[in-house]
Image 1 (cartoon, rainbow, N blue to C red):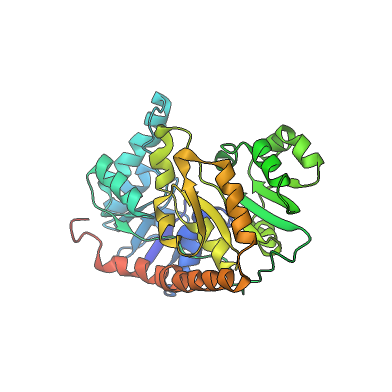
Image 2: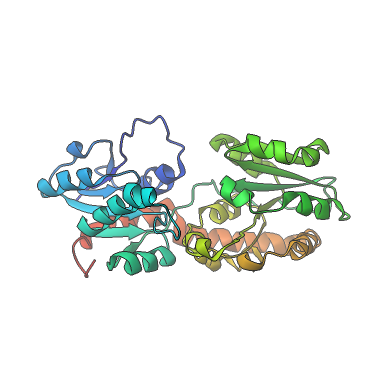
Amino acid sequence: MPIKFFIPGHDNKRPTRASFRFRATIPLEGMRPEDGIISDVKQAKKGDIVVLAKKSKPIDLFYLKSQGIKTVYDICDNRWRKYVSDDWIKRVIEPHNTICEGVDNIVTTSPKMRELIMKHIGKNSIIIPDPVEAIREEPRVALKSKNCINIFNYGNHKHFQKIRWGEFMQLLFDTEFNIKVHCMLDRAKKFRIMYKDEIDTGRLIIYDYDYHKQYELMRMCDIVFLPIVCNSMANVNDLRSKSPNRIIDAIQSGKPVITNEGVDSWLPFRGYADFIGFARSFDYGSQIQAFRSLINRPKAEIVNRILKGQEYIKEHHSPEVIGKMWIDLENKVGKLGF
């Protein structure tokens, strides 16, 4: 049974969108010639399994069911947030629930998302993690001998704005190391204004998000810094259910990573990155000490840790491994109580 990823309105104009890459194009690298992407549900044929992606609507599901076509809903974000408006409930949650209840199966990215789906919908779901995207790079670590240590932070502005970067940068500048911080995010203009003083020192650069530039900066940097901060209990589930794609790509790129606990799916990587503290009690001093510890660590120890992480990624997150999980849906659709 061919697997068809339904990407509404797909026309290759936004091939760099994360959900499109991690939940369709990269898995397809490890799948069969008959599997693929459709942009209109009317392109599906009886005998296909259609995976409904983000922005799918109940009308898409109703059409597929009327044609006797098997359906799977791929959920990679928590829509059941606390304290949402009536508009959000009507516009987002109600159509989302309708699709959840009507499909043959649900697929999701992490154990926490699976737990949330069971809580809100009462249906079991199949976990298919995100695949690795970055090309495997040999670890090149020479932190002690660098005249300037470049730190790279990237991700959504919602993560970035939870850090008091002014305070954090001052603590970094007060260390014995010459450090420059490179941050890449959406809505960057707002934060360039907010952190003008830090930028004027030449030691903080804030870039507009650019898919290709992201990997260029990853290769250039010495340390990847991925802080996880949760400022309210209302956001805990949203945070805990996230995918590990950022930490996977950083390790695959051969970079040492400093982060902290807060995302459930990141915990298997504790042996391959520095996890300092917890999202609910983010301690700036501890983070600075983590940088000191990493920079002063023996090179062989850092390299060995990254290599072990890359082997773990190969075994659990390669396009071939993840593609096989998607193919295996043909043995699970409508079965096992899903």
